[in-house]
Amino acid sequence: MDRNTYRQVDLAQVLTQAFPDAGSGDSVLITIYDLDANTTDVNAVAMTYEAGVAWTYAWTPVLQNNFIITYNNATQGVSHYEYVKVVGTTNITPAGSSLGSTLTVLRKAFLIQIDNYNANDLSGDASSGDLAVKSINKALQKIYSMVKDEKFMEAYPSTSLVSVTNQDYINLSAISDLDDIKSITDTTNLYPLKYIPFWKYREWSPDPSIVTGVPTHYTKLFERVYLYPRPSSAITYTTDFVKIYGDLSNDGDQALLPSKYNYWIYAEAEVEWYKMQDPYNIPQIVITERQRCYDIALADIMSGFNENLQAESIFDRQSQGRRSLYTPLD
Image 1 (tube, rainbow, N blue to C red):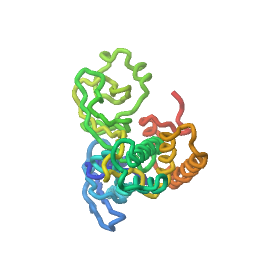
Image 2 (cartoon, one colour):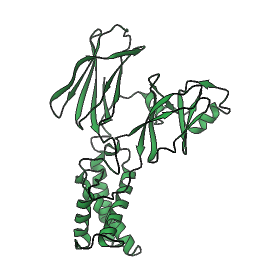
Image 3 (tube, one colour):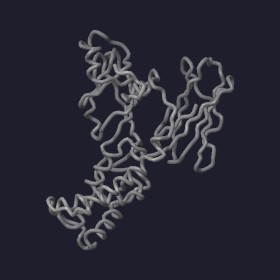
Image 4 (cartoon, helix red, strand yellow):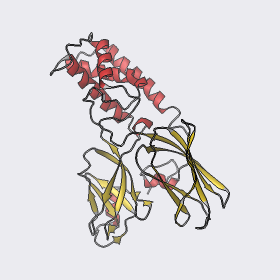
């Protein structure tokens, strides 16, 4: 079985593989090969047997490269493969793409295009530089929202959440840059919690004190994660989430999009520039060019990525709140 995943650089990853009909005495080995550097990162190392038919291995990638991971059950003579793209940084503030242009580059190129760049008019409120930065940041935030589920935005930061004994929720207020939760994993019992919509949580748990134990499901409402059943003890969860990305403010801050899409950033920023100048008199050519750049860039971003076939369990799709065409309605 093959699968494709994104994993975050400089962050410990628990690699997990199951082998149906396997036994605890099976010899299960992992090999991790760096496709970009043409080197072997991990060479046929024994994985740790956990429970049932699952084995794990802890790996911390240090390079933002492409890897192929081979999970080999030597006893069964069966191998599974995982193709991994290591992306992101541990601290993504305000952006982490090593391919994105810096604020200095974006601001200069944009002003050359729209306002006859003047190096002496870059600082101070309402200066050309200030207006350019505001336009670029508004453009980037709109673009981030449009491509938040695409490959450039999928370097998920992780944090630890700890449940409170006999309390059915965990507060999220401490995560100031949280946009959305992608997964919650019980690191003690080594399984991911399944997502359910809030209405189903209330249907299952009209009185949380009645059903207690080890949580198996979660839902999110505003600044809280609700657990079902209500935890009877404190459990630590690894939580992967989507960040709210901050504006570019320092000259060296980088956009998340690779520089090949700067034309789209400039086209969106130009609309924002004219909106600040005269919102009722934006040249039609600016609107047309923005649409053209949007169409080209979005087609390029989505081509060859979302259409790749990936081996994914239908039950995993349901646990993440995503429905396939064949997922029955509840």
